[in-house]
Image (cartoon, rainbow, N blue to C red; front, side, top):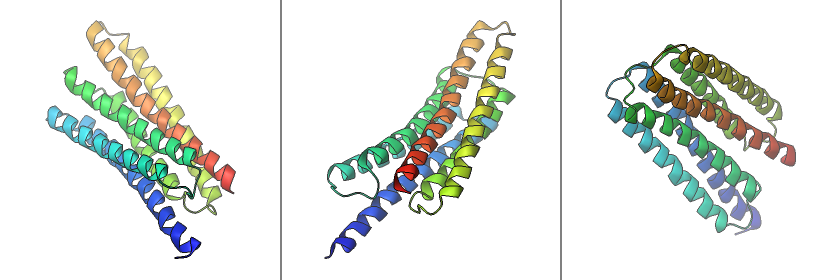
Length: 209
């Protein structure tokens, strides 16, 4: 087996794992959106989010093990590890938000929270695009366009969160303020981590193009 034949399957394997994780991130965001829009059977929906997050963890572990036993990789070891970690962060914050909706016994999802999760779904879709374009370094312009959109969505998410939290403090239910504020912050962090993932990909393209 020649060098080229040896390295190409490795490239496909690494890109495939990153693609899988990007798909899981999008699945998680869409599942969370369904949860906040149809806020019933909360325990079951929370469990579904936990299962999705665990599948994402499995991909991260698989990728880490593959990196540890592979000398030549299509992208720098550290960059791939960092990207997988940022995608995992998105899943972690989404799952933790869903868990808090259940454990804090939230009775009703505010409209602004639904809007924020919709922004998160849009961000996850953009992240999915850029991860899947990662294997083709000729798509730099498309990558840039998607990364700009992720940045815009992160700003939209910040604005929604700031206004929603400000509105919370106009109410008199202190416990609700504390509970909902924390959930908003976890959802906002999920959008932040989408932007972090995009930043890693921009760095990868800068190094390899």
